[in-house]
Structures are given as C-alpha cells and as structure tokens.
Picture 1 (spheres, rainbow, N blue to C red):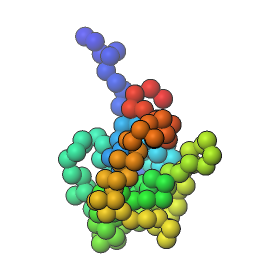
Picture 2: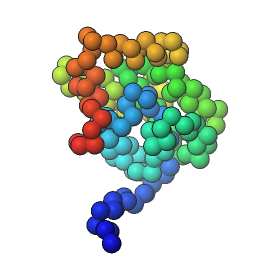
Picture 3: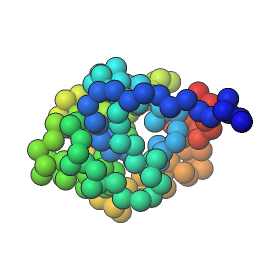
Length: 154
C-alpha cells in the first residue's frame, strides 16, 4: 500500500569488510565518509558495521571478513579497536588502518595498508579519558566539527 515509503536497499558488492571503529563515531557523518572511502579504496560496500548492532559484540564476525579496517582517531586506537585488531591478527586477516586527523581546519582521512608504527594503542582507562576529553567543555565545538553530528543528513 505505501510501497513508496520503503527504502530501497543498496545492492551489496565486493569482498566482506569488517570495520572496527570507536563507538564515538557510530552514526556520524564521519562514519558515512569512511564507508565511501572503503568503497573507493577496496571496491566494496559489503561492510560489517558494528554501529548497526548497537552495543552488541560483533567481533565474532571478523572470521568471515576478507579485509579488516581499523579506525584510529587522531593517531590512537581505542581499546575496543585494539581488541578487535588482535583477533584479526590471530585469524591472519588482511588489515588496513584509517587514521582520522585534523590538518588545520580540515579533517584528513589517511588510509594505509597494515598498521603504522606511530599509532598509539590505548587501554580501556586511556580510552575513557579520550572520550571524556572529547565530551569536555573545551572540546564541545571540536567534536561536532571533527565528527559531525548524529543527524541523518549529510
């Protein structure tokens, strides 16, 4: 009856990619940009996106993926991403890193094969501190600029 209201699902193509991302970028404009980068760089829109599963664990899906992409924020892997990288390494997955950093007033996305040596691996305590810093008053506008807001609009 109201078929025109249904969203047309985008046809999936390419190898399965597991995206390991910090929860702070779930459902943001940054996440949308990341998906476009993966489609461009790896020729696939077939992505396991943890944000689609809320706070449920998805690391058991890493075994089915051909590629594993770890997202770093300003040169840091959060503890969740660190745990998933270790799983991907144990499974012998092809690993890529996408580092999101600021360059002046621009947000820069640096996509590399493997894991760069200069990326810092955070503990759970350090991850909590990073999130607190992003949420702090001195960063209130910074977080919105850096990641965008959670609105569905582009």
